Image (cartoon, rainbow, N blue to C red; front, top):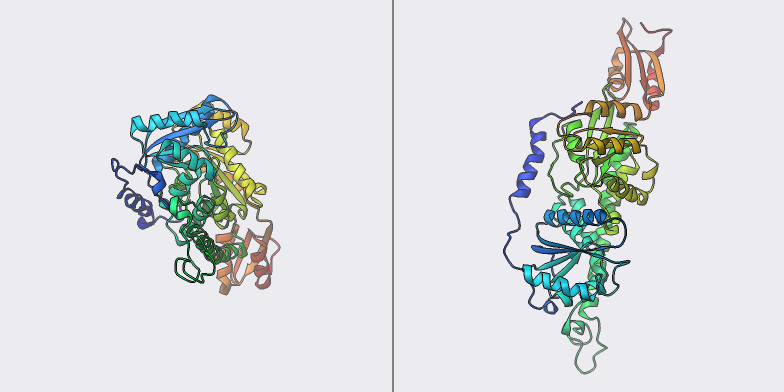
Length: 470
């Protein structure tokens, strides 16, 4: 079952986790803005935060779960959550998201708690951000910016960093703004500042120049990601040419996808009880109980209202799901709303061309911490499902047997006498196919196996048919 068992592989995740925990944001260093109008461009530096949500539909429990998830996101980003507020409205206020009266209440809470940031549980328009900031007098960010910040912290590979930067710039571009004199600051013209006799007009304002530079950077990033996706496609095509079945692990963030990959293959990737702990996809080899080889890929985690900028930027990574022969859809059985997790992931699947058509097994994880009634409820609703615990190993054997059953069948059965000098084909039959019997005779090896079409063609070129196999 375990393809990679070397000690250094197992230590990889532990080393990554130790490195991540070695540097933490220091609580107590105030980043409160005395006058937000003086700041033009600000990096996201979260610290002491107040959460604000708008409850438009569903039950009160749904609203509480949504704000609880926002709390986990904020803590993953390194923040200390001081207070959480939910307002019941038919729809968010178009001016301030929560309404002017509630905005004043939030300002009072910010003053009393000493918070320096307000996080809203939704994607705010540039106007809503600006007006709410003017009222509460501290930095305001939305759910999308928070998720982008977490991705920026956790991205490790060159491709992952480029994808996150592209998503951040896509989000920033329409929200870029200046205050006071910055709105009229200009470049170009005959003189450096666009002034002087004979000037040819004001040229670009500072904000226009910054927008142009952002667009140029986005174009460069898209070209880089396109080049890196070509490399990913090459590796994927190589696996497809060998016709090795592919399995993709997908699911909600922190559902235990990396833990499951480690349990199945011994990959040793980082595991942390945090949202979006791993972003870079990991592809490893594994074998079914019958010895059949397949690849298994861990993908980026999903979340409710995953920013569309991230879906676009990570499209090349998410194609691992669409190109798979089987999806292991991992859900956290101990979560307060596992059905909501399933729905959120399938919503993202709908945005990935071809992903909804791939066969799916719902893997209900964390059985050791979940309520038995909840596990039974999900299992009844999801026809193709299995209950496991990646931490304890419960149900992993049954999952591997189910993978064996669901993978594309080996539909070419061969009974051939293969010469001894083509032992490489016998070896491939063991690795890529299902060997039923092997008999060594004087002229060569009598092979009886089920194999993929490409290997069957090569065997038939060099082998001789036999009437029966002993």
